[in-house]
Image (cartoon, rainbow, N blue to C red; front, side):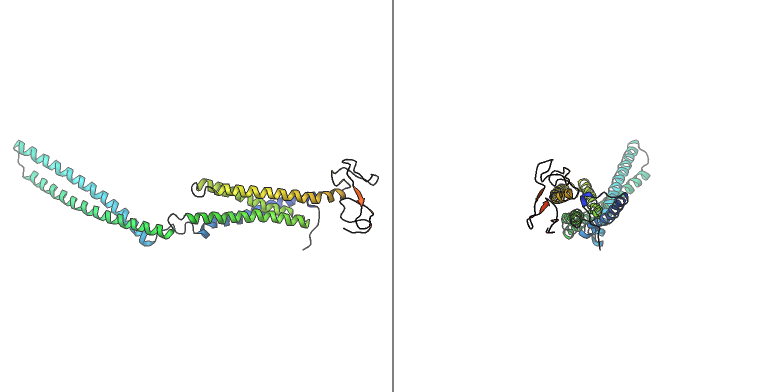
Length: 302
């Protein structure tokens, strides 16, 4: 595919190109967001959060037994209160010399109810203890199956997300470098990829600072250091690139390759701005040649 070769530092992107770069960034972010969310599934985070049917049954039985114990305790307390009231009524009737047949019957019934409530309470306690042990065993099995707290899966998920951000950011920077080397007008597309990586980096930082404050609290600072280092490296690379490209660009514009001062045909061999030599002998044919020009005008040697 042919490209329009230009000096990338002289590019003035049109509004349409900038708009399309923004559109590209949006669509890249849609795909990156989908991959970011899917990282949890790929790492198995949440996959083992669900209990097995046996484990869930044990936990449900523990909850049911706890509720049954509570009901039995309430029933026992209520029966004990009724028994005490019946005893008091019977004692008061005896003291007054009143008939006690009905009260004695109520007292015996209250005593029977209390005895039954105590038996039911003891049975509920045994059942609750057994359910508690079963639930404890199920919890141990769950922890063993999921690798305790599953923290390594959180690390893996974070690593996958960092990999995604790295591909977008570092890949975008490499794309920009290749586009510069080819002197193509597709530079805004490289910027769109890098911008997507930077935005996803912010999402990562906010996500992990708010949700993971224990084992993964170093994630954002690592991302910050890597991103800052990559940006500085890209800036240094840009400066080196400009150091190679600017002299030639200035020569094409009729300027001094060293300071950019205007140089014309009537000018002497030295720049009027910085005083450095701007015309020197060609190393091949020794004809006068502008310093910084890609080829000699006499022999054509680079």
